[in-house]
Image 1 (cartoon, helix red, strand yellow):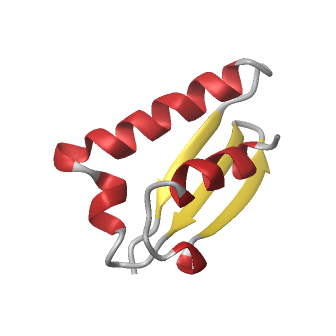
Image 2: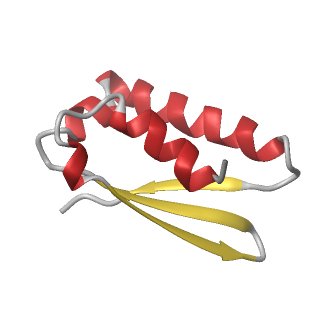
Length: 79
């Protein structure tokens, strides 16, 4: 399972508008960058109170990447 698929699984279990979830994956020298876009109504759910949910998701992605000696970063794009 790729980091993108793993993130999609996590995000789809949290949001109500699954059709509006978009994830772009870019590889570079520093590792993998995942850019996440969700419906603005789901943004609060993804970020969570005081950013706790998004920080937990980032931590899980870092652990996932460390299993394969890869760095995985997450960027949330607000529209």
